Amino acid sequence: MKRNQTITAVLIILVIIAIDQWIKIYVKTHFVLRESYEVASWFYLSFIENNGMAYGMEIGSKLLLTSFRILAVGGFAWYLFRQIRLGRATWLFVVTMAMVVAGAIGNIIDCVFYGRWFTDSYGRVAQWVDEAAGLMPSGEWLQGKVVDMFYFPLIKFDWPASFPHIGESVTWLGVTFEWPEWLPCCDEPFLFFKPVFNFADAAISVGVGLLLIIYFLSLRREREQSAAKS
Image (tube, rainbow, N blue to C red; front, side):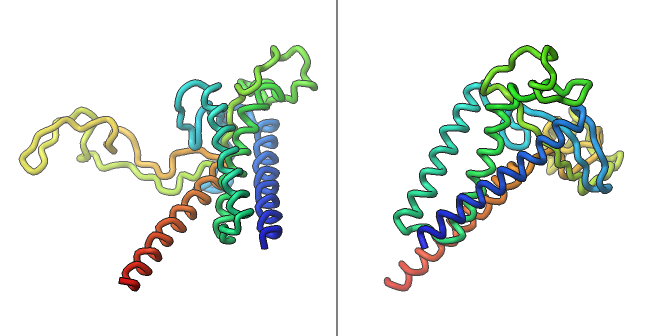
């Protein structure tokens, strides 16, 4: 069983990385930055790049973030295969942890190598550096940007004109306050889902979501067992 779980984890990691990198390299070498292609009214391929974490979030410097990612994914991978080796891993745990590790590695590849592999995508389709000598100064390791492309504007509508504006005074339950910028307002239409993401982000999100479900189910099972014993 341990051997089968190890093989399964490795295969999942390799397959997700391969799919993620194929999509990213295709978009990188066929789209100009900010170019968007409508697949359906609710699904676009929209090429953007970001310096940060999943869904465009940013924390700290690029070098620090990339280094943290490498250390974090190393820790996750070590924990996964250690649990398998000790015989403590369920099949669901193996699959979900492998998804998280694979997604993290997929984005790390962008950060570590894309600054060296490709020319930039500003106003032109990127080229492999060895095919475009002289077009770009030598990039730096660990400074690449993560390629995102999946955009799903599933729900779109305009707020009614009576809905508050940013900074407008609003009275509710006898309390008057200014409508803050971070709340929805009629100044701009409502849109769900705004973030542009990639296949690696999706693998991480699904994997983390399933891991949380596993964790809470295990807690519930432990409470039920403790209650039964008492």
